[in-house]
Image (cartoon, rainbow, N blue to C red; front, top):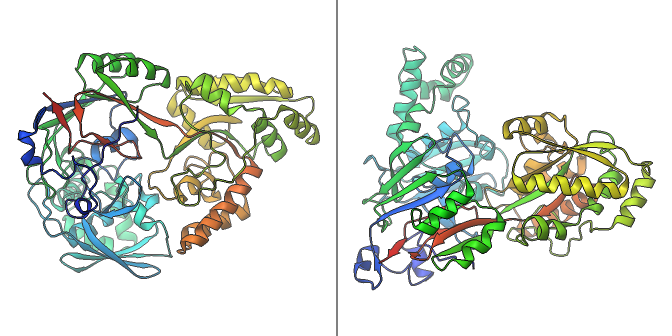
Length: 556
């Protein structure tokens, strides 16, 4: 059972959109609702802990699943992934490279400070500051300037026309942190480096640039972020309460939230690494929600009257990747042959318990540019054998498959090892620890690997640019080391062309090339595996697998 209840993101616009009965009710008026009660302490359990409470510093999902409820961005996306206002009430594109945003005037940070255009500029200056070493910088490197027009108007200028800008502004990397905290954070970094300089002095130096600025950046790099980490202050409906690293993080209701306070008193994220233990906690009621379990546990949750799954398709692709610059995988006929021996339906049914859907290419059905008529390389052993003969490898060769220790990926690697025998390929399977795995696939020492790629913005650019543009080779995302002039041209055109119809044509052509060149087997679009107690109402989990608890109530 998929449970997806609508969410009140903006009290004015989305009330007019009339999402659901839940969303149209003033939370303060719900006390009299039969069978429901406001307040309560909600517990959600995940298998991994967050790495940072600084939204500019990290890009991992466990961190985003917490930070998205502390911080807000200028824009957001609705359930159909359409751009909606959030901290910006409206916006206008004045030319190809310039956007003007009018900000809400009733927003307060958790520390009591105000939100305005200066805050927005301060956040983007920090995000793009080399001293911050932001893991999100690649999403915003096209921004040339953020200028304050007046107290509640801000102008963003990009270096070149960038079609996905609005989508990028909805990502957690564009979260707004309190200016007071950012100032304190920089001052702490400067003091720790032993520099006789105020934060304001540093901002002025950053504006002018030059060697002196670069010297200071070198001095404070590694120090920036320590205060934000300890004082994560945003504008969203939940404020940071306490954290026990490796165990739990607790958020509490922010009563002065501009959109109205959440129903719950607190939300606690617990780290329960073992899947069976998380499910047991859900069954006993020790957790109200859990996330991240293997598909073979789905039936157990469905069969329990007190628990129910909450699943939806990820904006992500799981794939079998080839190092296209390493023999014999540098021959596309070999890559095509291996693609043809992979039976995706068998993988989904046998390894993923029938969950997920088979993609033909890398752009998901939910996104602009998806081509429903695209034909992938289907399971066809006879054609695979023909291609191997054409490439001069009729007698096969030896090759290595590497994977991290995720159980399903290990199973996929073993399946592929067996399937390759049909084209006389003798494969070994090596299972690596996550860090070592990323390092090896990033340096290009590998042959075949099993991995996935999430799209953090909902624009097709982020489903393909990091994976296939030659400038992204290695640890930045392009672990197949694809280096194709036409692919680069199309990727560049896709992100700089502002006409939507033209972008669709560009991405259709791109996907046809990527199917033919076969740098990877587009194996599966996965389901996000979450589950909740049956007495939980109003939970919303978005397309990026990030929960929103603001409308949650617990039945009496």
